[in-house]
Length: 299
Image (cartoon, rainbow, N blue to C red):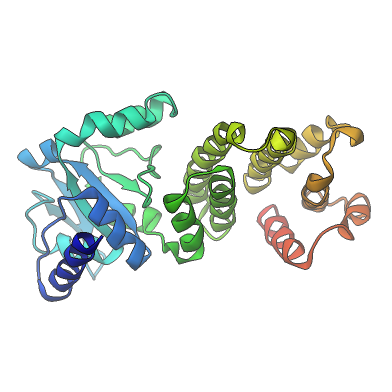
């Protein structure tokens, strides 16, 4: 622990004093620094740096500038450090990192993990820009605009999950990511929702480690959280259809407030205020505020 803190102090000193900062070489230390700075991690495989990586970026006057090699340019490096914590990861780490995700991610995610492109990750190593593709040259300005997230809003949940991976830490992080997505632009919102899904799926896998008598309630809670994604994707009618398939006697008591929130938000999002009214009294003031935000997204 002391060794990690020492490395962090040295790296912070480098970041503050160097005009052209070198990229980090240790993933765990990069993640620790990103935690402190409330940033995402920008990661590439080491082999990628053995050849030129041309990119484009806009200057302060809005002009598009061609950069021959991302890893050697003294102008782009400070820009990247301003928005991310960049790290070059050794190929020797590949096998261990791949082993952790090979049976838990989509093929599209694994392809992104394997390729030579830039990967934007959270502090737990999960990739945000899975669907982001480039043509001839990586547009650094576009990458920053879409993926430079301030993670302060979800900092506690990120830390809780990193320190203790259990159903509740995974579930609450997934839920918080969905909340964060409400503040993002539509394209970024879709990416954040996909990232949230990683944690929902992880929460579902961890249900088995909780008390047996809680399994049904926790599984239903995950199903409702997944359904909430459609509210954020402007598909409230689908939410209503799916909710109506759940019989009243099947709703676990502890999940009834969540059910009420879903019904209220979905009905209000489709302009059916009379249908929504019967659910309103069952919703907390905090969730009513969140419901209003989602309703506004659907207008």
